[in-house]
Length: 576
DNA sequence: GCCGTTTTCGGCCCGACTGTTTTCAGTCG
Image (cartoon, rainbow, N blue to C red; front, side):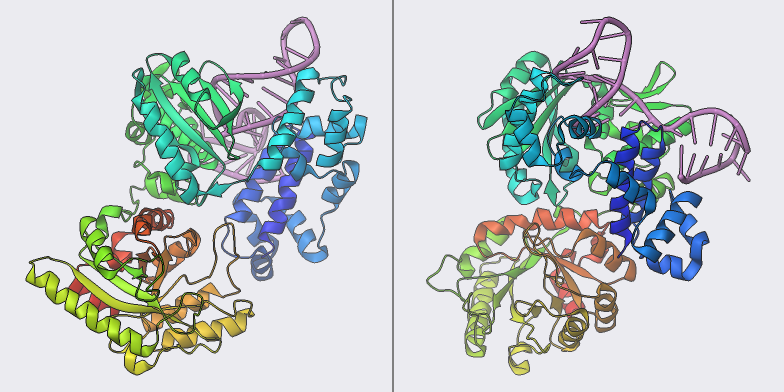
């Protein structure tokens, strides 16, 4: 897809124009970049099909930008961009990551000191050359050095799974403070993004100063880098940032709406306010000086003429249009889930750390589940000591015995028995059909030979999905957030075959988060059913379900799209 | 540079904080 390449150039153009102090054009380029990135079709194809006219139908693209896109498609370059790059040949992306450095300062640093990247910046700062520049001072130079230090340890965006527990613990200690009346998570964490840049807290406090002092002295705080009357920001030793905003109780709703974002979602909501002759800020929705709505998010959205939008949807990917029409989907919730069908037990690893079937069942019952599906690895996967046909059948017998016991004890709970079979290189399954047919269900996953080309992989997945015993395609695209790229695949092809064969696509709740939200949305639109599983390898991971739920919600999935919201009989019917 | 059923011209999201250029530009979210 050329979309991202062109978007990146447009972002660069926005930066250059900002430096030149050209009014309004930077935003125009930013908007166009964002618009290209959220496009599901390749601009090359759009152009091939409909020419310049089709390009100009893309939001934020007019005559001039359409010409630039055409130029890029034809030559791989855009002249104006090349010209700007020549004028300011610096590693802009890299330098912009330094806290407090923006495009304009970077330009001065280049012109006066020939700073082109982080290395030359550090050198200039250490030689004390920055402090004397016009517009710079001692403090700025010191901040740049500290910014560079932090950048070295900065882990960048961190996994939601790692950050959420820390953030919740911090939220809890904030709530314990006697002067704190209300507190909430905000930002990308409240939207449950896959990765988190920094952690945002919102509090209402009877004593803002006291709360802020408490916050900047939390254990793990390495540096306070901003502290005013309403806001404090800290760097944590673990390499991420946390922000605290103290707000008044009466504007809690508008502040929560504002600080939850996303930025693009907010820009649109503010524009809608303007169209209605109103003004929206974190302090409220106003007509002139008259406050119209501010105490709850519901009030704010309602006054803008739309439904309250779940945070997971607030990415400016069409949610506002739908909310204005009053047609938001009713997203799947954690409470809708009746069971989990991707769970590994110690049957595959008798002396290892995995849990027994009894323990897993007990925990699942405690969580209110109606069923839990055991899906141990199968024989091709040596690392996890996958089960042979014989071992699977033994496990099957044992599970049947346990179910008899549960029912004798009057428990409304069943263990289901499946397996997570391997999809071999040629698309065959590593367990005999005869044995597969005796299980309640089969999850099939790719665990090997992931470097195939699209065509081979498509044929491989198709063959697996066409196996009549395969019910669920496990972690369908093979990605692991921040760790492994998805393998080459054609998602349209996966969807087509899944639809035809009634194969269920898994939403894996572990750090795979596979399917991704954009794929979930496409599966939903095609009517392909999904299942949210945890892929539990350790009993505590049964709790990961909430991450799969948030992923599903970010993909606009509803209860009806997710089969493990069904009672057991209907679930088994659907699988068959 | 884009956009429009109030407009083809005149608008374009909003506010806090910092440091430095004593009144505001740059940066951030």
